[in-house]
Length: 73
Image 1 (cartoon, helix red, strand yellow):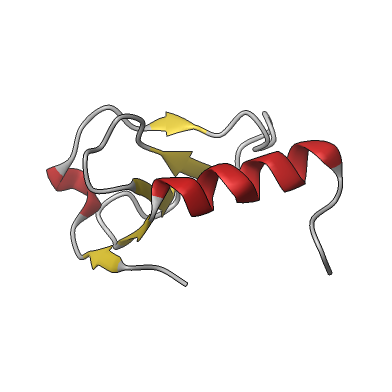
Image 2: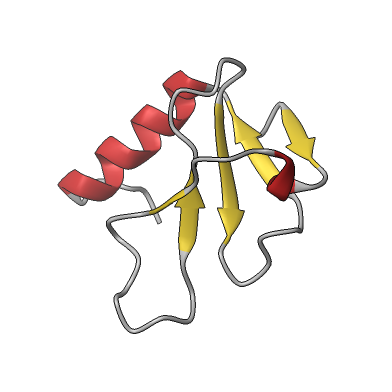
């Protein structure tokens, strides 16, 4: 569960495309590193839209599960 929603993600700078997003465009997830309140995540197709703000430990656990293939279905 997220702690917060950032209503206009363009208010933040430094977004990067997730390394797990495809290179062909389309569905991409962007994250913002080193944000003090957590890890913002947004849809690259809607950069001015909302970003979800996850607590950093929760985001780290999610990324680790994706990398190891242990993400529960």
